[in-house]
Image 1 (spheres, rainbow, N blue to C red):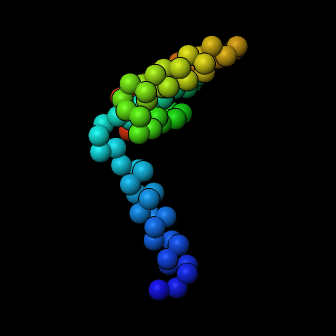
Image 2: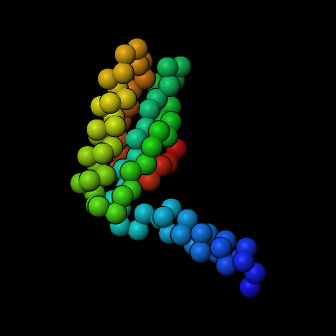
Length: 85
């Protein structure tokens, strides 16, 4: 197996594993749009291995910080789970 494949394969598997939320501890931060209050726009995902409480806390903290910026007219909110439209 050449060097490229030996490097690429482990990175690919790592990306697939990180992308899975097998234990349901992920929280996702969304915002709406100034032109469409029902729009769901992905801002960030919180899926650290430290667990549900940790991820929820970080998402809620980010929500507060984004929402508190001067001039912000959109609404930010957290939902349990991975991003979905």
